[in-house]
Image (tube, rainbow, N blue to C red; front, side, top):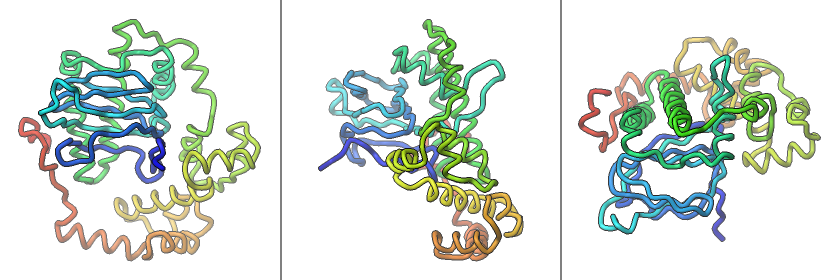
Length: 315
């Protein structure tokens, strides 16, 4: 039996950026849903996108906004059936989009309100062009492909820019950010609790205390967390810590003892044991392997084969 839910690895992949071509990828995209916010930029052809039972047509140069947990499917528009449908895809865990102006609610709260108010799902070609959205999509896909130092920070900065442009687009068409968005900012739920975990990763986190943040009993929280993230809260914390250890091993020269402190492990030996269980090698070996590969030039990255010629200067 095929389920509508599409597994989302929010731990290791808080965002995904890639190109999709109907000629050489699985197509059409059957109805499904996930916890990511998803944005599409149509590069060629035209798409018929079904979102929560409503059909939208998105043409070349237009952007489609698909909110988290929305059931959606993607087909070719019948008028462009003979053309390849090519589009760029950006997916993101909105709970990681935590920056905001002092006077503004968090972006996640604004988008949640926008969905409730049924704001535009398709951004027209001229507006997308005026906001230079195509370059943002290509930059994110390019950085995701290369994975150079702090590529994730560059992608996040581009995603923030994109989110703000979309909010402005909605505001120009009557969308008002009201008190509902501010109220949503002050609450933790099972979908936003990962932000709390991230912010307190260097501490001795207890699942019981995390459950309290959500206003849930320990048993109910554990069940809901497992259902949403496909793993226990304890496993999530451990996986996230290992992910952060990886980054520190690759991009800093911190010693293992200091890295264990930064990532909330009880001691260095605990970190080494956990890392080895998941990565099948010690942190020291992992670091030396990465340095060796980088020295060989095999991790330098490259622009995707279909990276547009007019944007090659970005490389």
